Each structure stands twice: as structure tokens, then as C-alpha cells.
Image (tube, rainbow, N blue to C red):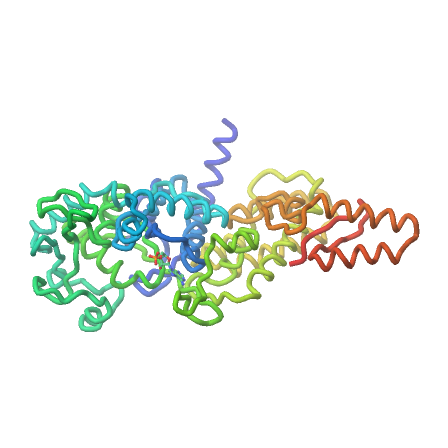
Length: 476
Ligand code: AMP
Ligand code: ZN
């Protein structure tokens, strides 16, 4: 009972804080006011599952996980949906190449996606709707759009008629001729207007398809998100997110479909877009051969360091990925875990100890670089503290702030021992070398002791002698 009362008090205190978010719709930082503070809704466009996610794809996953954590810190009930696009022409092509059903491909890559993002501390969303499980809702939405003259059927297709929605283009703020060129929409003879886009298209006998009032076919990409949002979150949601590249045409089309099938009701009140991640200042692309897969990266570095590297930049800015990024993030985590390690025997203080400055940074349009600076300040204070009560509070502050950012939840010693699999030398072998060095020192054979220390350093293992014996860590 006591716990419940405490929690209520804490959350009402937190609700007095103001979250501001840069809203692409208004081009301003707006104060976040949910439609219903007891059910905050967020939708993020998820992966199309036919290949491995690259580090650029991980950026929205980590950023919107970060936002979900902040929202959960403030509000008692947050419903976060991130979809799986499991029907798409590239999926169909790949399934045909392998001679398997599309579900074999989509389940394989959806599992890999969840595991890869999990390694970066990305929690599963509350709802993970699949396009193939939302076909009846898509069909119903298209029927309403046709009924209201916003869509029409033509040669087995259903198309959205862009001129029927005068607000089209409000999100991306582009003139219509630029949008038509930018969308690179197919110029098909059956289109009433060159900007019209496909909601439904026919499937051949070999292609996967579903029966519909317009014949056997499959949905276009944009209608999927609109229908999944309507089904799971409602007509109007609080936050819609995705990468900046999705702003046009994908998000513009989602707005058109959803508003026109809901009598003009607003679709999403806050639109958030993450900036792009570049490789050594170049676009990541297969043709340049610089695509870095999360699946490979997590073999080489702790997932937590990859997450921190992604949070080191502000989400709206472009982020440059280069060879220095991960060693830097690893060294930063060494500092933070180093502070926690020396508080190992200190009991964590009770209560809420997330510092105001850190929370305020996150509430200011997710200023993660500033929040991280506050986290390092905590580590510095923890390293300097001598009073036990102070240490207990700083430990709580580090752990709670870390939790809020999806960091610092490993045991500090395990971090230094690379328990997440990033260790190249096995821990037992390192301990054996340290014992041999200690034996050499006891025998006053300092040349041998130094040789062992240098050999370990060459293998990327740093050792520190302290009052409690010799500790080791991997070089950052
Ligand atoms: P896709 O699978 O291409 O639809 O992308 C999935 C998500 O990753 C979308 O939200 C994209 O906006 C985002 N995304 C793709 N490439 C990058 C990149 N290089 N940097 C940041 N986000 C990206
Ligand atoms: Zn979408």
C-alpha cells in the first residue's frame, strides 16, 4: 500500500514537468499535451523485414525507445506501437529466390531485428502490429475512402486521389509539382492525377495476395500504417515518429488516408523525425560499400556502446559515424561504470534521484548530449564523494538516470570483464596472467611482471593495482 501511495505522489510531481518536442507539423518546439494523460499513444514506422538492419536503421529504434522511456517516466500508461512491414515487393522477390513462403523470410528477419535492437537496449514496443494481420482493416479503410470520393478503383488497383485532400503537403511543406517529382510515382494511364498513389494493387497467381472487393491483390505500403494505427491506437494519436526520409511521401500519404477516412479528424498531433546517420560524412549505401549492419557491429563492440554512440548526437541533427565513434563511446562507458564499480559496496539510496538537470535536458526535445553531460557530472561527483550517504544517493542517481536512458544496467565488474561477449581474450586467461604477474612481483622479478603487463596491454587489457588487488579492463 505504502508503495502505491509513493508512486502516485511521484508521478503527479513528474506531471508538473513540461516536455517539449520539436514538431515537424508546426516547425516549432511545442509543449507536449497528450489527448489523454492516462493513455499516451505513440506510433513509429518499423522495419520492412527482408534483410538485416543497418546502423542507420538503428537510429530511429534507439531514439524512439529513448522517447518511450521518457514518456513512461512521466505518464502512467504509454502505448507505443512499432509495426512490422511484412508484405512488400522486395520480400516477395526474396521469397521467390529462396523458393519459400514470404513468412519464412519475414519471420527470420523480424526475429533478427528484435534481437539486434535488443542488444542496443531497445525495449520491445507495447504493440508490434504486422501488416499481413491488418488486411481487413485496410480494406475497410479503402472502402470508406472510395465512398467519400477520396479514392477510386482502376484496373484492379485502388488509388488515393491527392487533389481530393487540399491539406496534402502540410507536413513536408512542399509545392505540389515538387512533390509529384519527389515521390517518383509511377505515371500510369489509369491515374486521374500524377500525384495519386496506390492503396491496393493486383497480385498474379504466383504472388501472395488477399481477396478484396477489387480482386485478389495486396496493399501498398502507406495504407498499412494508417490501418494499423486506427486498429491499435485510434483515429487521432499523440506522437508519430520515423526517419526524416519518411516525411515525404510516406507520412504525407498516411495523413491523407487517415484524415480522409476519419472525416478530417487530426491524425497525429506531434510528428517527430530523426536525422540521418552518415558514414564518414557520406551517405550509407550499398553502391558505396559502406553499409554497416547492426548484426555485425554487435559482434565487435558492446551493444551499450553502440547505443551510447547513437545518443551522443542530438536526434534531429545528422550523425556522422566513423572509426572513432565506438572507441569513444566505450571509453565513456568505462568512466561511468568505473564510478559505479567503486560504489560496489555502497547500498543504493531509496527514492527518486534522477537529477533535475538531467531530466530537464531530456524533456527539452530529447537533448541526449546534454543529459549525458549530466550523467558524467554524476560520475565525477561519485568519484569525489567521501560521505556514505552522499555516495548512496549518487549511486541511485547514476542507476536511475542510466535506466531512463537505457544505459548502465549491467554489473560494473561484468562491464569491465566484457561479459556481453565483446571480450577477445578469455577472462580466465587474463586472470591467470594477472596471477603470474603478482607471483613475479612477490618474487621481486619486476622485469617479468612488466613483461606480463605489457603483453596484456598489447592484447587490449589494462590493469590497475589498488588496495583490493589488481583489477583489469579492456582498453577503450
Ligand atoms: P527502411 O527499412 O529503409 O524503411 O528504414 C527503417 C527506418 O530507418 C526508417 O525510419 C528510416 O527513416 C530509418 N533510416 C534508414 N536509413 C537511415 C539512416 N541512414 N539514418 C537514420 N535513419 C535511417
Ligand atoms: Zn509508416
